[in-house]
Length: 437
Image (tube, rainbow, N blue to C red; front, side):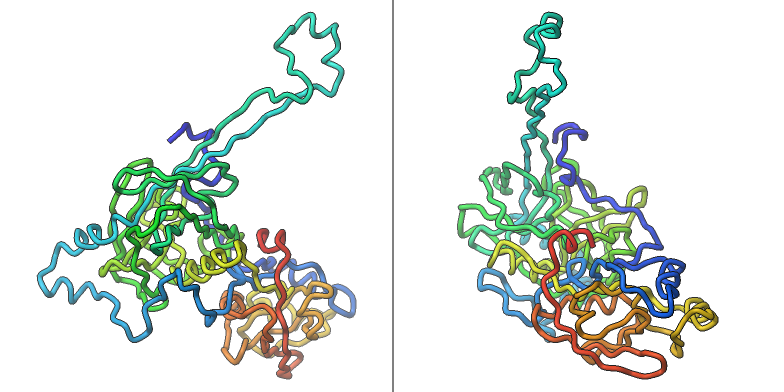
């Protein structure tokens, strides 16, 4: 790997800091939300970056069919490897069997970007007077002064026999050249089929066909305590294997300090280091359950992976169209607490009363957004989405993320002691908003 300062900005393992005040959806601090709700006799609808689109906020509908080039996740009734039964059978070397089975489908990805720094003078320093002192060292107008090649290394895994590879978007974002090195030593030039910065998922395609591919599991079925095996190329050390357990599931973007992403992560204590980005996280039977993507800076035993069901859903769109559209409602939310409830109810300028203790308080509505057109208002408390009870903004996001753009979403809100049902039709989030959220 090249010197750190010449790596692509996100070629290295994504590092995040925990910011407990940073909610999964673009929410606002309590005092800001209250101030917004108090303005005037009516609440002012302010710009909100949709917190309800996937990847970190909007995705394809969960029921949408995957392209035939992707293997479908295990069904709910299919057996997921149970480490206890494996150990009970006397197979204490199951990790070696997983590595032998999956290793050939794990690849190293090298990405490079050529940056041209042109410093043609615009301030008169090309005047002959100055050139007498600097001579030919003076850059000619319109000519590049220097070219710099930045390089980075990540991991990936082959998902089908068409040469399509899943990896992190931050591994290949902005790259002008991508190469894929197989376990047998062959290096093949790759093409970025598409990437989505919001979920940090990318698909690379190589011309080679009939390659070994990885078996897809079902990340919805995993539980804390199950085995977790990571394979990748940390710190340039190819085919490195680490093992541990699934430490937690459903870790929100806010919880790990990556509020610009729209993912509920798998947490693992299997060692993950820079260069592991894009590599597979596997269960005890060798099925991929996640894609390693983030670590907490300064922390040990805290690694995070994108659930494979999420990565698959995004990949299917990237393979089909080269891009991903994220559902956008146009609301900004804050989780309701007893403290917020008390402050609003005791505020003489508030024209609403809250009579529930839990829920998601809408702080802002984007003008002319789907939420505004559906009649949602600042001060509404979301109780359920599509008939599913929700307790916080993260749960609201999860439901909306699996809603197909253009399909109506039924949202029940509590407004001044009454339950009101509204039908909201999400639209595709504008790219800058989707990435910023």
